[in-house]
Image (cartoon, rainbow, N blue to C red; front, side, top):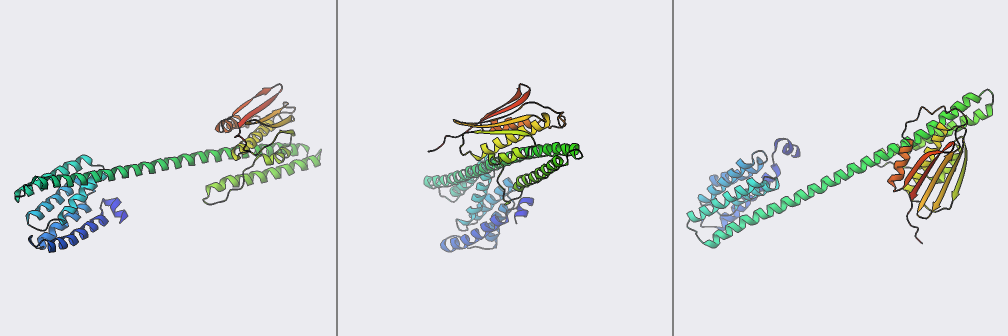
Amino acid sequence: MGDVRRKYGFDPYLALIVAVGQMVIARGASWGQRDREPLDPYAYALLLVGPLAVLLHRRFPLLTTAAALAACDLFLIAGYAYGPSFISPGVLLVLLVVRGRRLMAWFMAGMTLASFLSYAWMVGNRDIFHSVWILTSIMLLMVVAELARIVRERRAERERTAEEESRRQASEERLTMAQELHDVLAHNISLIHVQASTALHLIDANPEQARSALATIKTASKEVLGEMRSVLDVLREGAPRSPTAGLDRLDELVERSGMEVSLERVGSRPLPSQVDRAAYRIVQESLTNAARYAPGSEVSVRLEFADGELVVQVSDTGATTPAVLSESGSGNGIPGMRERASALGGTLVAGPAGPGFQVEARLPLPEETS
């Protein structure tokens, strides 16, 4: 039924409800109003015009509303019981308002008022209070319809807002995953490349050091596969996501970097997960850049837990051997680190420092609760 309504513009459920309601009320009203004409085939035919108009209302709004009003007037003029014939015009007026055809709805409401008042005067009922009652009833119906329209539009607006927010969050999540994948791949692939070059260079002259480089390649490849699986698992609904790398794994990161790295921590305190992840990725990307552009240099990593911020500083002393990967970078390393810092309300400065290079990030921290 839902497909029929969407494809052809029919309302079978509502039409059936109106048909049953009019028939039941007509029998009761006819039994209670003995002075009116009893129901006959002509009366039932007029009562079926309204449900048929409701069925076709989406495709022919003005024509069906006018047809239902005409059937209602004919039902009254024929002398049948008051009540059942009013249902279809009322439903159609409400549908016009709710579906956004307000001007047409108010025009047809005026036509309904004119026809009802004309019938009352025609049968000799010229009581001013009866006329006011008819006017009030139609106005009340239209006010209720307008309120229903407002409620419907506000609900639709809330749904649109929720959908836009959902799309925005999904876009942010995709951006985060892309950034995570970039950091993971850039660091580990660069490390694998450097170690592979070292192994090839030393495999004959120094097999033990070459073996160590190959072991580092094995560890790095396992790490990149694990982290990629962790990030991509988010794309599968309900899939668990393993904890993202943080500063607790910094020693492991330094160990497998293949460079001389000194690590210094000044102070300590629990960190929010976003800050913890960002600090780790900044150190990781900085080590990647050092391996790519400054091979053979000495690298120092300093973490300072100052008041209200975490200062991450990574500096190198400059390349001592040719930078075999200097032309293979993506160019997104430093901008990506700066974006991570900015997203947390922090700053990141990167540039030459003497013969080497230095990255310094300042990430704000919430106040510690006692």
